[in-house]
Image 1 (cartoon, rainbow, N blue to C red):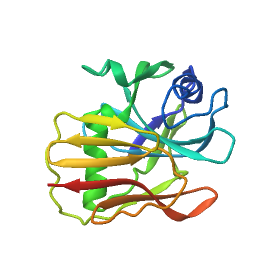
Image 2 (tube, helix red, strand yellow):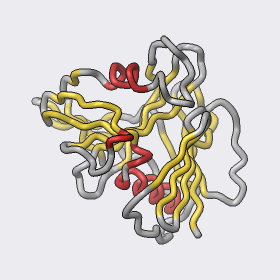
Image 3 (cartoon, rainbow, N blue to C red):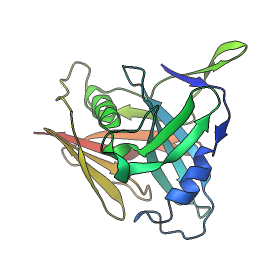
Amino acid sequence: MALIYKAQLAPSKLELLGAWLPPQLWWARPGASVESVGAYRFDDPAGEVGIETLLVSGGDGQIVQVPLTYRGAPLESGEDGLVGTMQHSVLGQRWVYDACIDPVYVTALATVILTGGTQAELEIASETGVQRREPTTRVAGSGAPGVGVPPINSVTSTTDQRSTTIRAGDVELVVRRVLDSELVAGDARTLTGVWPGNDEPVVLALARTS
């Protein structure tokens, strides 16, 4: 269960992405506005790191996938993946990272894919109490409950015009950045998702173990 605070963010997530996305190889939309399409979250078992993946468009209908982590302090050696900082009216300053460099996200993604998990259910905390909220995007891993997930302590990643490949010990993950066509998964386990306007499951990420 992901607990989300009803809070003011400065700058907003889309404002942060508006500054960060233009240089990314897989964005290629200079000057385009960033529009939200959907989002899903994973749980951090330690409750310290927010893990959210945004699906956004540049207004041309093409959807890209942007996994983010939100931290209360800088990630050690995470400078290259820093999207920016924001002020959260409840939690204070938050450091926002491209989650593909963050071991907490990589562990969560591998676990969901390999064990057949789903997105975290959402609870919104406000002054009037806690309420459930339906996720805008639902995802599912193709693995099976009880499958072992190799330990992940450090990660390396490489990105091209379409995806980011993450290597973490015995696990290799591919996070699709551009969601414009079907992907042949071969022998890999997959994360698939549906979102508003798209009811057919789309492959969002792949996982292989050695």
